[in-house]
Structures are given as C-alpha cells and as structure tokens.
Length: 139
Image (cartoon, rainbow, N blue to C red; front, top):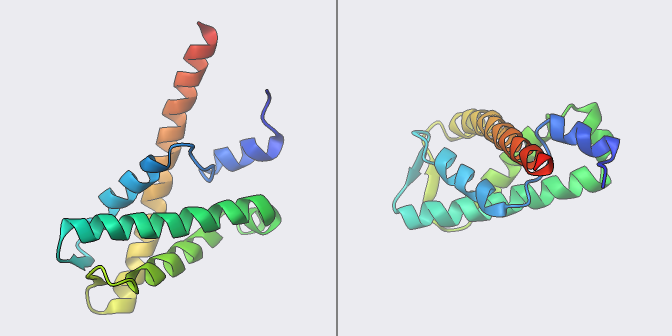
C-alpha cells in the first residue's frame, strides 16, 4: 500500500508519529534528565515523562489529522508551543518535578532544546526504521 503525499511530507518533517509509543516515552525520559529540571525521585521523573508524552503525542496526533493546513503554514513550529504548554501543564500534577529559577526562562529554554533534540531523535529513528523496512522488502 502506497503512502499518500501528505504522509511523506509529514514524515520528512520528522512529525510522523511512530507506531511504538514506548520510543517516545524513552526519548522523553532521556531528555527530561536535564540540569534545568529539579526532581526528587526517578519514579517521579518516569511518571512525569509518561504524562507529558501522552499529552504531547495526543495533541500532535489531533493536529496532524485535523489541522494539517495550520501545521504546514507554521512549518511544524506550532509543536514548540504545544510542547511548552503540555510540559507546563504536566508539572501541575504533583510528581515533585519543577524547573530551576528563573522558572519561565528555564521552562522556555528546556522546551526549545527538548523540541529540537526530540525531533532529531525521531528523525534518526525513522530513518533507521525506513532502512530496515527497505531491507525487508528486498528480501
């Protein structure tokens, strides 16, 4: 089955959602171990990563499906705003996660770094998966 042209465009932008949700959670856990974040326990960090990832990926899926025109006009930069809002909202859950002072500056810096590094991880993972799929087709 061939992919539609929209799907290829989304995939090239690194915005295609991977079928393996645990990869997104693993990337989030790795990235949330940042010097900008203060946390008490690793279990709280894992819970926070899961909550933030669920928020981010659910909203991302919704936007990709129903508001692709906005996504293409903003060249995917709307996801930085979405990441910021979701990361902030997920800190409201009491899992003893907070950002260092100055709070807003740390949050903003973290969101920008998080968005771009996660995007790079996802693109690399997609390329590896694409090569594996190509090799399996050739066999």
